[in-house]
Length: 234
Image 1 (tube, rainbow, N blue to C red):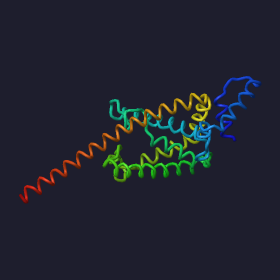
Image 2 (cartoon, helix red, strand yellow):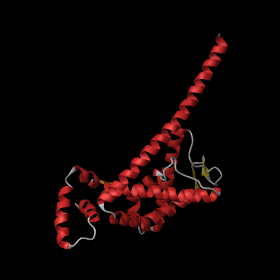
Image 3 (cartoon, rainbow, N blue to C red):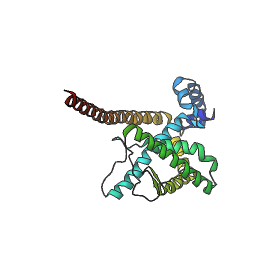
Image 4 (cartoon, rainbow, N blue to C red):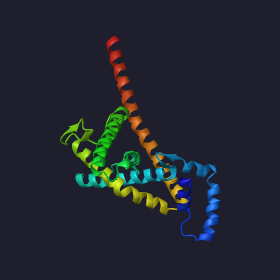
């Protein structure tokens, strides 16, 4: 009920009480339709509407912050996303999952910092290992950083993750939710749908290219093996 009314209020800004009452009842009935049912189901303690939009916002903010940082380090414009779109889903997943787990520590800064640093480092390591398995490489490299482990995680990034966790949970997340609540439901859901559709197509194209490169490499290796076998026995 709370999640449903929350989305309804966001969908109906700046209306007078009388019309608001009748419109609220009309929209509340609409929540029983499939469209609203999908958006108001709860995952990780919040409705899907807010969860998905927060994921999109954090993914884009993460891309922006990291691209600016790496552009300054490289002294040239650097796109830190895997694909062409300004989107880094690792930050979106990290932020929404991290908030769901760590928000009970809000107000306990040391515990929040420590837990955020450890959890984000474990998450970064697991993503790095998955990328190594899928693509044969990791899209970041900490080998030049002190106290790194296989170039995937390092002490400097761990310290930074703790600060990010404190910043997101004590300040940023409430601003993100406030921004989402300021959007009409139709606007928020449509914009979110368009962004996710574009990003999905973008990632499919890039993944297809990445795996085609690997397939070509495998093909060349099998051709070499065949040629060696042929030269040896014929």
